[in-house]
Image 1 (cartoon, helix red, strand yellow):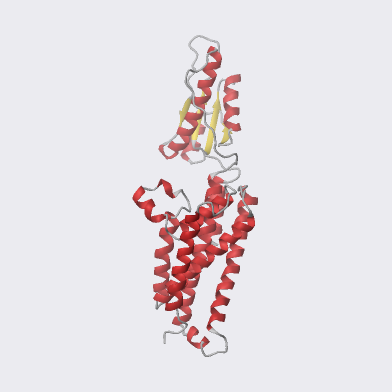
Image 2: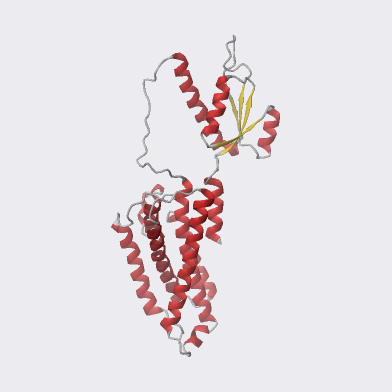
Length: 336
């Protein structure tokens, strides 16, 4: 439920029908230009617009946090009269400074283009922005891939580490050794059952992201699930490694939390890790979750092969081998 909760939270903020903020639009002039400004803001699909007639009423909405920014157009704006007031007022408090700056830049750019048209001149200098990909992507698409890895990591590491340690603490593992069930059969059953849970988790997250919040998934869905199974296997091995060294449930919980929390924030779940300081990036890029997320995102967002960068699969494979060796030599169903 923890990753699903993240999916809904980020989907509501950054998914379908999400907006940067709510704008109270007060148009005293009712001119063609003022209506064009209002329409351009609406067409941008960045802001939620509500019409207001009174500045005082709009300020009350700001105080109640119902509105982020007030855009007030003077009565004489764009009218052919002497001393016309052509200055648009944008009002916001410090808590909405980012939204205020965004709407300010948006309207400023619109008015600059309008000034060029009115004066029948062309700008000398300009900027042309070209996207390197023709795919439509959003921040929610980036985070959704991160939540997939987060779901695999949390359920596998914490589930295995705490579950196995609890079994050992309650002497259940020791009792299993006296039954006809082979140790490898018991461990295999644990692994397969959790892989089934991981499969269900990934399915729900993708369905909710895709059909509730219009997430973009461009890659092969079977490749995504294959990477998820590889990731789940890796994190289960990490869970067995923790269970090999922890003697109590509280110790397992502490070790699992100490490992998963830093990875949740430093391995690229919520933001690109290349924005980190170089010294920190050189370390966190080798965390188990980081290369897995790079492969999942390469498939989900770019529809390219996860093996395009061989380093990612090499790092994941290296972690699998190391954790497997430790688990084989250290993990026992009984302390004796």
